[in-house]
Length: 353
View 1 (cartoon, helix red, strand yellow):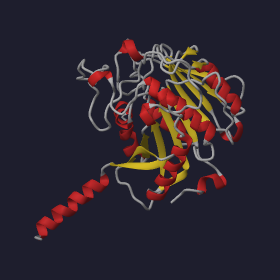
View 2 (cartoon, rainbow, N blue to C red):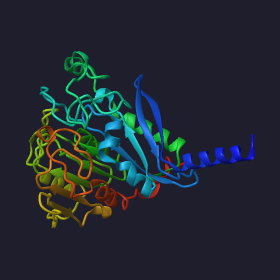
View 3 (cartoon, helix red, strand yellow):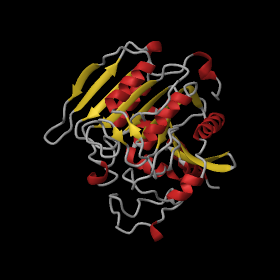
View 4 (spheres, one colour):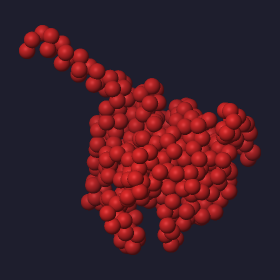
């Protein structure tokens, strides 16, 4: 090999190592293969230990949808974060609460094949009006078939997923966080309740606590919520979540209930983030302090916002999911909240490579 060719090859390898790297991983749970994507940040170095953010997609979405609509990879590269994008079984998370009779689905949007570009409709840029053959989404099943199947053991899935990620990549097991949108937000709440020995803190966007949810974490778990006051899927003031037909309490009562779990002060400190220019969206911030073990519960209420990711993509039409705020950068406020949270003591050392 000529010297110039060898040098060029070395430079190519170096540039590839500096870019974010994605790998598709699998684990087997109850004889079912479960998938997730791991994205390593630019300049990943196995000699360092990196915080981990699990990003949970909404109902009938997939990891690519979540990666695209949040644009979280940009922050992950800048702040050196490993991101995990798990795939729900048949596009649905087991949020730990039994739904009632199914209703017609509203956003988040139509499921597509993992890695296949935008769906053929549903409000994505360039989307057509076609949909899928016979009305059946890829990798999905009719509702009656789904109801006959036992719910997925998602807690076992997340435990196995974190075990595998901890063994293959250089992670900081004291700084693992769960963040989700809509049904993924409901799942992030469940993970905060059920995996408090592994999840340092959680954030839920466009989600609220189901009325029948039982949450007894082994320690206080910090929570950030971001909710639009005009969310057509998960009503801000409480009511029926439109996809799962679950009864949820209001966003404000959800924050209050979680603050009680964390043994916080009864009343929050209140502040506002002003709208940026005409047509912008003001955001009200309720912060519960004085919590046990320096935990915290914070609610961002986006005036006029929908079941959307502020600062992210308007992934479906406004009449389906509501408006997306461009005044608030959800990635930045979530990460600024999470980055200060860390598991203490023996909890942190079990899975660190």
